[in-house]
Length: 182
Ligand SMILES: [Mg+2]
Image (cartoon, rainbow, N blue to C red; front, side):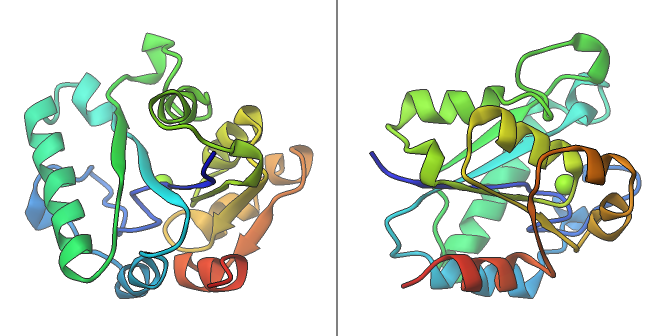
């Protein structure tokens, strides 16, 4: 069984956009995130992006357009020397009450079903408490709130003190540098 790294996309690998990421021109990749992914390329971890994209469910962006943004993001990460094994997207809105939209753990379980993953020794990173809650619900051992994107604001929410303990790092790079020994 392989451990995995689960990465949120918006606010963790790329900058958040107030009115959704609708096309490639809306994508700004954090340079530190690219460097971090390059560094862990040869690690034993399977690497996943798990991303809520309710803009699909709201009809703001098509499924095909969303997939093409993700494919291009993966290509950019690869050309910078990084690796992503699979991207999992939840297209639903909150009202759909699906099993995959974070804070639900569905995307993590889907990845674990496709690959044989050791969730206890896996790491999840995201800029929202909903990421952390999903990781905790899936039994992921280390759940990290990064302070990029919405992270600073999320860390100050009362709910941050009410959920089980989680880790906080400045960004993806500082987190992975500290947590992944190579
Ligand atoms: Mg996010």
